[in-house]
Image (tube, rainbow, N blue to C red; front, side, top):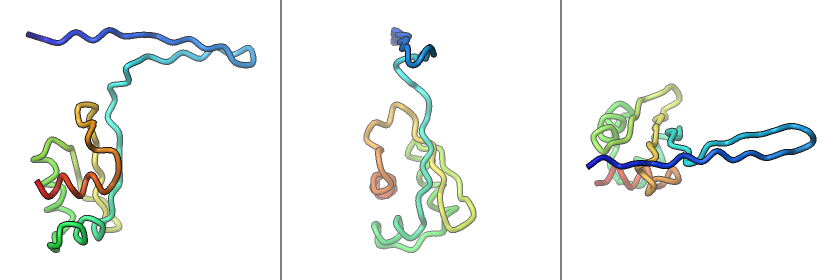
Length: 93
């Protein structure tokens, strides 16, 4: 059975300008997490490409980026991932 999501458009007037926002915001959030933060947290030395692969297996779209970092796109369905330390915890699963 598919889920139905009701969309609400919120209008706000500010200094003669009209702002509109649509809720809920179902866009993915981008996070950039340093390699050393993840390695220190899990106690294993992994390359950024390995981290990205493991995170992708946990439903987080991830890729290695220059500077020994991992770029992670967190979907709205992963409300448990709020901070960089949460990305590290997901990599432990």
